[in-house]
Image 1 (cartoon, rainbow, N blue to C red):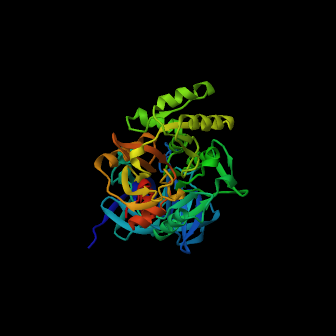
Image 2: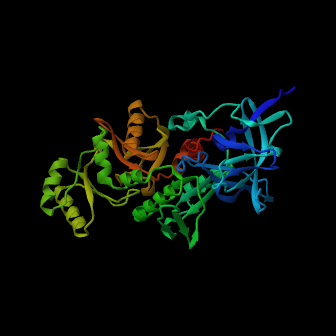
Image 3: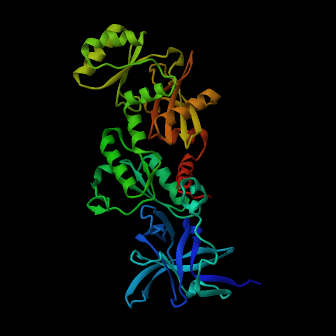
Length: 456
């Protein structure tokens, strides 16, 4: 048997299923329906089921505190407000907690910006055992001010559908397809967006992104997979998504750090991470000096914007190195000169790091013997491998040094220990998934969920 629950005419309410730990509500027995203040209300579908996404500012005195929410859409109904105005509102069902009592009720979503209370709890949201005292306030306690502190973020957890933007110009490649399928299988909407077809409205109050001429809706999470040739604009689009309230699996600055190979090597060196001896110079007069800095022949000459093994050349003599460097300077191309790690024998390690952990690793090797590169795109063969504790540690440290959460770290095994060759901020997952027989795309989506405070 339930005991009576005595309420004041205003109370702090916990909406745990919406990640809202406390919101001040007016308990109004004169109103039939309950309502919640919501902005940017948008309906979307996951597996043909309708959801509604919206944004709540639970504390009027803290307008910058915004919580992104989503819930299954019950229906849309016409509601007549206290001033006689009619409005077609979205209705959801959510869990309400007051004191030690918890129950589900229907709530309508509407803009209550001009109202004193961000939530109204009407008759339909009250249970029979509840007694409302019209002259009393906060009988169940005042706001715990620690609830909205950053260190308490992990306590705000619920299961809900996310709207995820996958930034890619290749929606049909293996990695893009697997991420989309993983997101959908976990109850989220994943949309592919080509950043080159976006344009931006950089506004203080209402920053927007337009895609093929139409404004994009609000997204919870962005997964940037930006091509090297459009890095600058792709990063601008990613930053704009952050301005609209989304979070990104990799921050734009981290991606920029990884794409600038010179900066990446400087950051790795400053973090005390072992790398091959690397040289860089601007003046043609320094060609011999940079070769002497590396100190060994043969050596590697690498375009600063190379990827997938392209733009990487092995110079087997000093004369060949001078010729290649001269040709690159003639093209006004930025490049690095690196020592050749002969003992690696055309092998390297690809370690996939996610959220500060190595979640998978393979060895890539060129069995043909005619190429020093082991990239899969250059004919490399993936194999299972076992990482040493030091190799695992250096992969995580390299990812952190470049301010990334998700990265592919390439490591060479040398006589002086593991050396970080490169950190890729948009790693493919096909060779790892197939070699390790592991669903990495699911782990990527699970990480996005954890970043949004969602548990399984």
